[in-house]
Image (cartoon, rainbow, N blue to C red):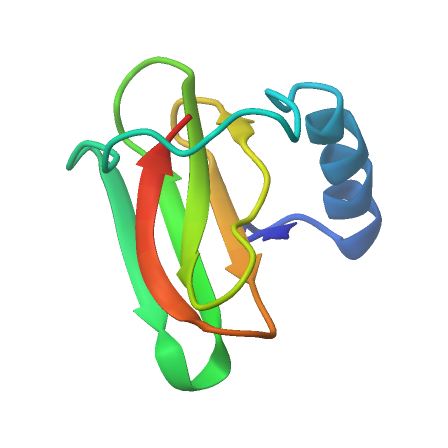
Length: 97
């Protein structure tokens, strides 16, 4: 997962490392579908999705994959955009966790 911003690669890498500290953990199970304030853009052919937190508060979200492993739960800050990539399966949904 990478951040889609105007950040340099080094800055994005640093932010990913920091974000890893704010994950809800691998044991967090997918809940209901994330609200509409989590904007989504999906390119299924490239197995890539982007989410932007427009909720005005921190949100805990994860990518749910059909016929493949779900992504881990991430804490996303207001205004933050995340890039999700997967190798097996197809896009299912973005869930709260």
